[in-house]
Image 1: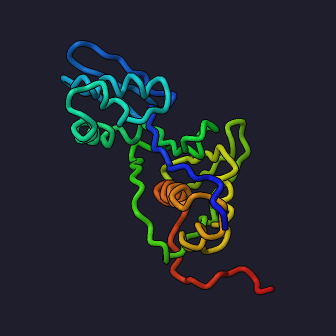
Image 2 (image 1 turned 135 degrees about the horizontal axis):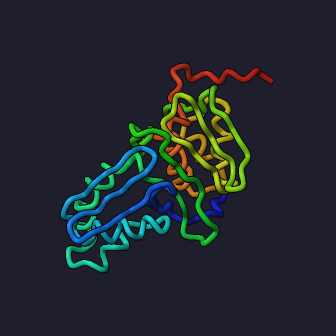
Amino acid sequence: MSQPMGRQPIHLWSLSEDVVVRATDDEVTLAGRFGTERIDAPDPVVREVLRRMELGPVLPENVAGDFADGEGGVCLLLLPTLSRLSHMTVRTLSVDDLKGPLLSVSPESRQADFSPGELSGADPLRLPRDVRVTLEDAGISLESAASLHRVVLHRPEAVWVVAMLAWPVTPGAASEALPLHPDVTDGILRYLAAAGMAQPVEDRKPDHPAL
């Protein structure tokens, strides 16, 4: 099958809309519906990334060009802070085709921790049975009482992947079936799995009726 979307996934970060950032010379304070976080004596790169994240989704690595430490040093410096602020952070998956984001994941609890990990191409996944699907202005939202996150599908490509999860499907089979770059399909599945919207299936036999 041809792969019309040849773009690589881009991982963007922003602060939740309810989060207010107040900065002084000595600290940065972030306040939102899940509490307050205070960062004492923040490094300039941390301060700048948070400023940009308050404005909208950003690629943290892009800040590297403005600081002498370079991309590697910036990432090592940012990771502890960004991990600490997971319950205040919206994670957005996009591609560099100027058509907008594929999906976004928002925290719904102070305990929300979002860490997309690698998926095995041979282990089947499925959409949880209790997921609520709602049509909104921003796209299609997915919510579950068992999940600490809310997912919004902004583009059809993300909807295609979710539709594959109506029955157990392996990441490898999903990539082969969809007209997307395999890395894009994998990125969408990783975000869904990290948000609790794609769960492992013990029984690998599809439960849809035979035709």
